[in-house]
Image 1 (tube, one colour):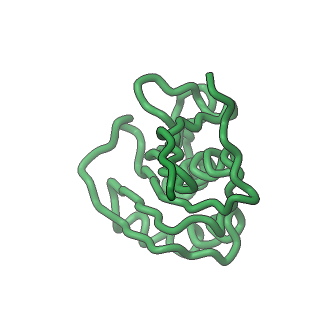
Image 2 (tube, rainbow, N blue to C red):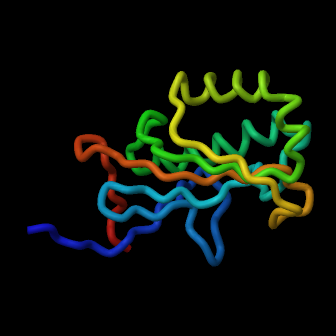
Length: 144
């Protein structure tokens, strides 16, 4: 018989401390990865355009995934919100190189969605996802 446990927040110390949200929520073996913009540890959006913002936002997602014992191969879906789709498309090759550098040749189900704005006005991208982490690697945070 299956047992149910309450969802657990996953908030890596390497990311800016969340206020009013969690970087991820673990429910069973499924990790829901909250939307990450290109915020650095100082809560500032990294400069340098869409490629650098992609690098930072995706690294933030992967930091949350790693905190729960996950690896990029555990990603089952990724959603990318963009304020400028043509800019993203124009830099697709470079963004693909960053993806492979950070995640290897892992390509989960994906969606790219255009939007008129994100939480931080200077943010050009926000990435969220879902991962399923096998029991043998799953790290559940200690109860607080």
